[in-house]
Length: 340
Image 1: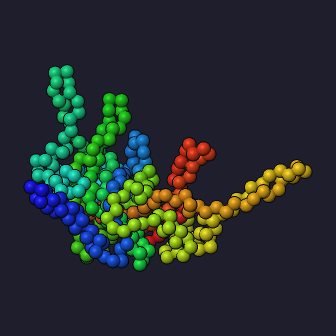
Image 2: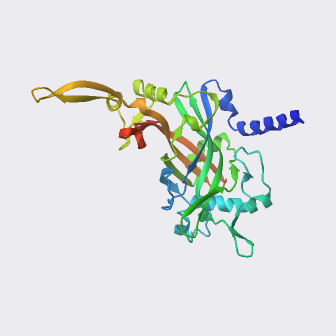
Image 3: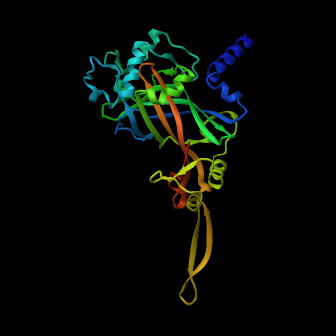
């Protein structure tokens, strides 16, 4: 029995890792890790969430399911466009769905439809009340992706593995309550030609900048090698491989301007016996010493004809963790963007 269980575990792992086995086998890829994070991927945000997972900018949105060239109710569908596509795709059986993020527990048609029903409460007679999620219930999406680093190109990359709509419902007081992921969708594999054309052919394109979901290395599941966030950022400052952009206006930074932004001096003064202010000491400061996390900037593309979602990592920012006096308050600050 034990060998059989080990065989099942091996097959399960292989089924997931098959989506990025080429990265594991590529000697030029020095680091590979899986990561999960929640994203808001609809054109509109909800104002009721306690956390802002990411910033979002819509690049392009084009409806393709029209009747005689007319688009009724298009304005009403735009705020929750991706939720609508995912919701309708689930109900129509357009996706390969699983109960788990590891994609080891496939769901049949009956189970998929049952996942859209949730038990609300029990009335006085003990009867369990059931409700069906609506497309507006899909407020956020839990994304499982693989992150990797090419040592040769000094380039970080990301590849989508699976996505799960996360339902949010209002309680009796109007507060938004987060439910567990409804189910996990295995994203269909694209041909090489489709991958090249996808950014242009996908009818929905958007860009996200991580905010409250920035990545630290203790949150990822390492599959190959290692990655030192501070060492990477230091190398990009000392010997830039790619274009670097300022945080405020996303304008290019020269190597000299980048170093001047990172390496600064602070003068500490004191009052001498004559009551004069004199320089006590000069402190050399390096903003990279506080780098602990990464902010990813990604372009996302959805093609409603293929029922396919893809993303491209277009920039990365090292995030410095800033502590207030006494260490009572911390916030993450992007230092600069490395543009790919």
